[in-house]
Image 1 (spheres, rainbow, N blue to C red):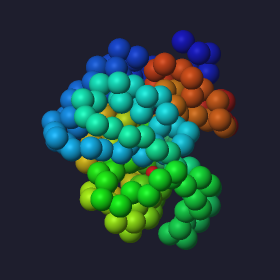
Image 2: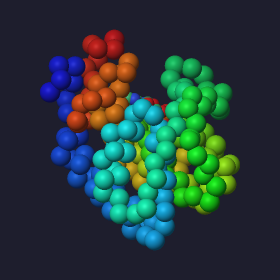
Image 3: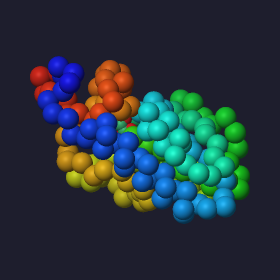
Length: 177
Ligand code: IMP
């Protein structure tokens, strides 16, 4: 275990098992359809990479990077740092996120993509912190609901570090205090 991790919340084994279940669910729900996974950079990368291996559908991937609200007053807008490479008219979009906290990022991203004429838009997140929610956003697929703790690993960072840990861990308070 990394020395900055207080506790492993979700092991590598639990992650892999749940991600296979999510991929099966997506494969059933979109049977016969083509889908595009839209990963939100950078946190969703390990989740998306594991998920896509178990999806049994015609599947494209694309990525978007948006600025975070963290530490700022929300204006209801996010800045697009990197946009999708291709148009999404008539496509089934599945937004792939690492964690939903306040819900602000996903609400705005969902709105932006819904306004581009896709066939459908749904959201899949590996983690959900329901206690952190400040705005309502529909999240169709959730890997794990977790308590209101700051977590790292499997794509999730603190100050751009720890994304490479293969598990989800709770960060020791002394690292960010
Ligand atoms: P929201 O707009 O508040 O839902 O923000 C979601 C984003 O905040 C995620 O994509 C993460 O980048 C970040 N975030 C929220 N909670 C955590 C956490 O516990 N660890 C690491 N990043 C987090």
